[in-house]
Image (cartoon, rainbow, N blue to C red; front, side, top):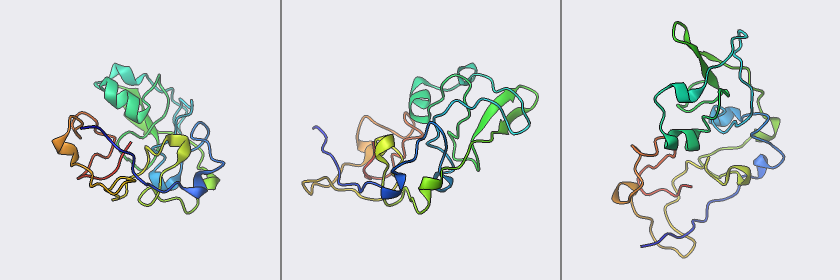
Length: 154
């Protein structure tokens, strides 16, 4: 079988916000894709590919270069700094355009709705979505994609 698109609402509050410059508090800044690469204490971040992340992790969580990210849903964006300290939080600005934005109810166009984590599970034409564990896409292979139950995801 193929796939069909879902009717996931677009978040109006995402308009005017840029994941290259800031991250939303409501998503713990998981969508941030900018180039900040120093921690709150001023330490330089080290490259993500120095650690055991797969190509899929790198794609879905944006683990490029040594930029601050939040791939695991921690309280803030962070990065690895060295083997002794491990990791530290980064100072990434909060997006003001995100007030009221909730990834449980809508997805941002600027993120191709990859941020959506709600429970819509039918397509535009009304067909029920398959469970993710009945497809070739699994939460093990795509740990940051939110592949729960049969909910619509990108």
